[in-house]
Length: 180
Image (tube, rainbow, N blue to C red):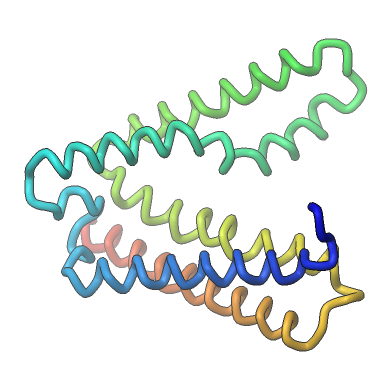
């Protein structure tokens, strides 16, 4: 970073932007009545635009899936490859490929219940990645230099993420119970 003294503001701005973006996206979806669909693209009217959106979502998933697996990969690497550094690059690539295959095949095996599965993953996993992990990393790095405003901002982000996680998990649980 060219100006390390601005790290706090960069983090805060990025996290707040993410929070507002997620809240706006969710509110817009609920206002449009998309809460009745497991997968939002199933609620859209058929046409070329929906096909483009689905292709874009697939490409986005292909490009970012390994990024969401990064914390798990880093943790597994430290456990599995502690002492062996001779063929570490190839072992890492093989492990990442296996993780992507497991998640992809697991999603395919879920079949018609993919919407429920993605509700749980979104409620538990994505809120952690978006709200809790960045704040935890930030606080661990800057806790000595954080002012009151940053503590309030971090607390708000965690509170918002916790609310999103609890409400999303609650709705997903109700959907599972309703299908039983």
